[in-house]
Length: 293
Image (cartoon, rainbow, N blue to C red):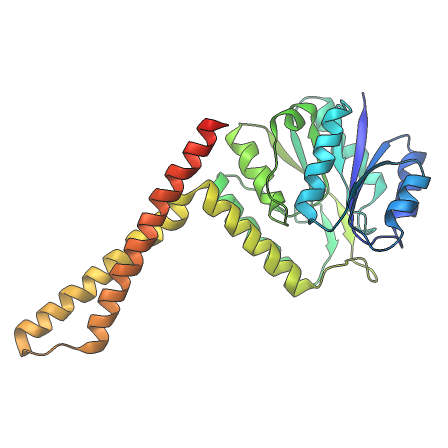
């Protein structure tokens, strides 16, 4: 069975060499996507014998994962494991991540930091942020995933052949789960251990969290426009009608218009109509594009 470990890497010269050496020592093939690094990340990876994908400029985590997917598909690997290149993941966890795919009991395996047996010495603010995004993803997929943002995952060749990724940002993790759910691929979680020691992350936690949330919401809004825009649109429209009826009743009883109430009513109705129309137009547009594809 051909197994590849995919490393998306941006300015990871401090960690990349050690990780590649450990992976090669375990006889894994290594694919490194050098995502426009300004340091020696790409040079180190190439000299160590990894399969290299070079982006001329930094395109984002999602673009790096997409390039790794394509390379693994082209090279006909049976299993792809995506593995962070910042030193947070343990090489020893890889074998248990690929075992369910070898046994054909799963198509995607997520290394979860939040199952009962998972361990992550993680700052509380980061844990809260991940849980918020995970709940958002679960609301769209109907799954009960505990760690939707884990970068430590394994994929079968079936997933590689079916999955065409479009998200360049951190929302790619959400994109994969939503598309996998739609394609009825089996997803399971395996507990893993991650230690946040030293300066492992190259992303500022606030900008990173904001990027993940915005990318996730953007992808969900495109994938499920009727839910994302339509339901809030109807809600605002009904609220607007309530305040509009209130305004009419007050005018009928007292002959005066209460400005604040009337403005809330009109504003809510207009905003609700805009959201509802947006959901319909985006839903139609997405379906037209899918049919052409």
